[in-house]
Amino acid sequence: MSNSEGAFSVLRQSSDLACASAIEQAVSEASDRDLCRVNPIAFAAKRGLDEEKTIAAFLHASRLGIFELSWNVLCPGCGGVLEAGTTLKTINRDEYDCGLCAAGYKPTLDEMVEVTFTVSPRVRRIGAHSPDTLPEVEYYRQIFWSSGVDLPETLGDSLAEFTVDSIELGPGEKAVLSVHLPKEFVIVFDPVTHGTQFIDVKGEPTNERLTNQTFRDIYRTDTLDVDQRLKITSLTFLFTDLKGSTALYERVGDLVAYDLVRQHFHVLNEIVAAEAGAIVKTIGDAVMATFPTPDRALSAALRMREAMSRINAERKNEDLMLKIGIHEGPCLAVILNDSQDYFGQTVNLAARVQGLAQSRAIVVTQSVVDDKNAVKILESSGLQPMMQRAALRGIADETTVYEIP
Image (cartoon, rainbow, N blue to C red; front, side):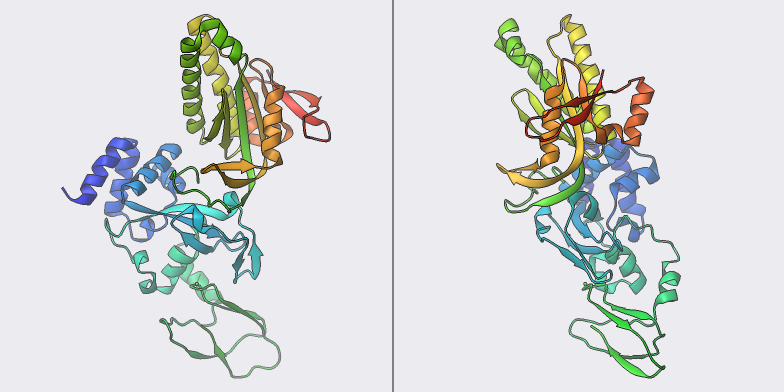
């Protein structure tokens, strides 16, 4: 059995079978272009696969050496890849400049960074493994632009419409181009180095000579460096805590209480993962988790509450009463005690909101109830949030919060 056959065998055992089979088929049959910077979400949508299981399968495939994972810093203006690295640690600049857009951007993890997967050359060699050999149009498609840019099959025709002239140069080579430029604003652009010159063409036509010369939680060891600080423009935080856990230990004994708390952690972990979230840390009997959007966090909160009710019904008591708080907003991703963590007012507010919850209540902020997908969840569940004003420790003004009964 070859190394790649062995890797695929392990992948089928460690991942969802349908996802693993789709990946193996793609590696065998897909075009070179389709195996460069694969977006697992788009891969799942195209094949009707479960999104979370597909992401997990690609992560396993990367670990097994079938794919190579890449962290790509994107320009929010043109969608070009400003920098690509094998780990999150490579995103360590305060600002990234895009020559094409003539603008600098502070990196935001959720808006400017994508994770893609390219088939390993040990499994199958594709053109993108030697990008200098790609035709110009394919270089733009596979290397310059990110996976999130929806490029047409007629990209070559589109580029030709606004390209005056182009030339490919090898390392150290120089060229002189004589071109007739229109009386317009012209950009001289190098897609490899992202080097740019802007020329405002004026006056009468003449013969001028122009000279021109590019997450957390995916790998445990691939976290931010100690001194890194990455801004995230929007992340949803969910905090939970068990009500009366100290009394629970006194009432049922340490051993039984420990087993109950451990069962509660296991259930919460499964629900968070199923809703595309991640548990950042546990603090005593409390959990801090993150989600990409408010609706995912809300769905997880409702499922957590139902799960605790089922466990209590089985035990014929009310030992596990979960208090839950949710808030969405900007934050900073940092490293603390060798683990990725989050800081900022959004995190503080989410923790304070959880402190308002009584018994099995879920308390959320305005940003959560304003989310259109969260509203759909509440309406379909027949739940009506009850607004209240609350004073939160460390927050100067009273905050509007909503209790979901």
